[in-house]
Length: 266
Image (tube, rainbow, N blue to C red; front, top):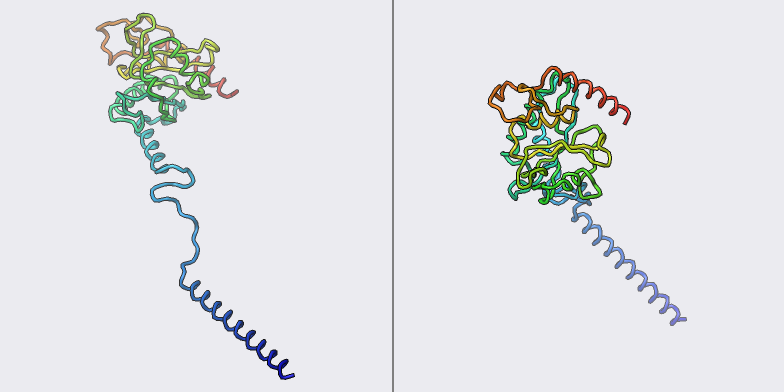
């Protein structure tokens, strides 16, 4: 019996020690929890945006909005026609962000187009600045011109309801090898009525974009000395006095009504 009581007493002491040890461990855990900072949400790396996975994504968006605002003229009540600019590298430098030279040159091109198309009732608004690879800085062949507007040949998917303009550093004259031209309104042989775009060389004078947009709005070349659709060299009238003729405006307004109806059906 003595042995049994001894065993019982021994068991009781062991149980009490275990309970004390557990209490001490709980107290230590509570102390550690009080000393630790509360859990926080996962933070994105400094200077980046976890949602985009890109460094400074918001900053780039702000830069692009600023570049678009600097390029676009005030449209007022005129109908806005979107223009996507596809930019090749300039003298080996990345096309974006826009260089000061490209910004100044494009602003002049767009301002002249805006001024001359007011009687048509439209205003051209740049909606996107899209980089092109170095191979598109020089476009010298018919095949290369066509490939720009074909996504399956390394080009782009053309935008519905907008005008795609490819800015290049050198645009070859396919009718006179070795020579350069300033711009061209180009059609895809697969669907020449619907698939078309503009190529604009950086050597273009201020009225070249307006001239190519004239082609886009159905105008052919002209022999009228007043018309910017006349590409023959001439001293008179001065360039500052040239524009579209009344007959050309009438034709472009008809073309615009057709394009507007097509856009409404798309």
